Amino acid sequence: MRVVIAEDLALLRDGLTRILEAFGFEVVAAVDNGPSVLPALVTHRPDVAVLDVRLPPTFTDEGLQAAIRARAEVPGLPILVLSQHVEQLYARELLSDRAGGVGYLLKDRVSHVEQFVDAVRRVAGGGTVMDPEVIAQLLASRARTEPLRELTAREREVLGLMAEGRSNAAIAARLFVTEKAVSKHINNIFSKLRMPPSDDDNRRVLAVLAHLDDDNPAPGRAPRMSHPA
Image (cartoon, rainbow, N blue to C red):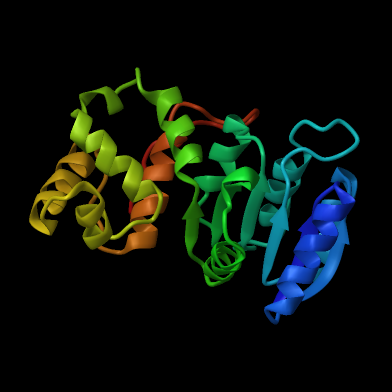
């Protein structure tokens, strides 16, 4: 499995390379600045890219912007963001395009190497991997808008767990309720968010993330009018 890494810290970049190679990945490029990301992704077209958000020269959102441009040129290019920061505007743009595997993890919350490697594999396979804190921040930024404020406290809790990619069974175990109760909450959520329900975990995550992007378009981009699951 071929990987491109974009990380400006030399020790972390080398560490990521060594970890991935130890687990059988082939790191085809490891870049340390924003302008190098897009050429590396388009040239190598890796099975997955692991990149930071803030890269030289401006240390703002070069990594995310490059990822979005790369997915425009290589539709479905799997992207795993590994950062210390949640850049909400471009994060929504990346997470809601539903064009292939995508993930967003926070560096200081990845506690096990195996957890990270599993996330890379899941994103490469077309899955969605989200850190709960990322979801919490995205949800909080929309909490006062319609129709999210129509949700009950329990429905918002279930929504956050759905956006992490958890199945009904996993949500039930986390909340100490039955799967039937979870299913009822999810049906209510999709109804209030005006989205068709789906039993596919990844499609559910993408539908939720797409909803978070409503009325918050990136610069130059019109709001989406609907988000079929």
